[in-house]
Length: 89
Image (cartoon, rainbow, N blue to C red):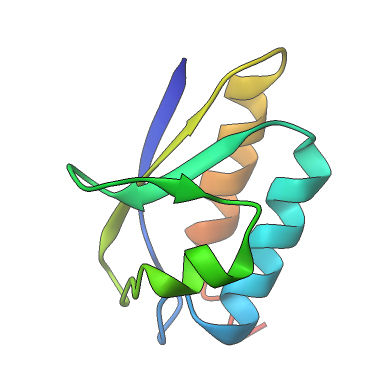
């Protein structure tokens, strides 16, 4: 299982637009990916309601996990996405 940790760069955290862009990117990977606060429960990252329900704020760290072919590359691209301020773009 591949795992990555990243701090959320978006000023409002994983809500609204940033969450939508993240969920779309997760779905595009075709892999079962989970996201959650470090040390906390993880949720299906393909569900916008579950992702927004985490209530992750700006600069909070989340852990991403994935299994399958291409999991490392998929998580690397998602880390890059979450490392940007998606509200400013």
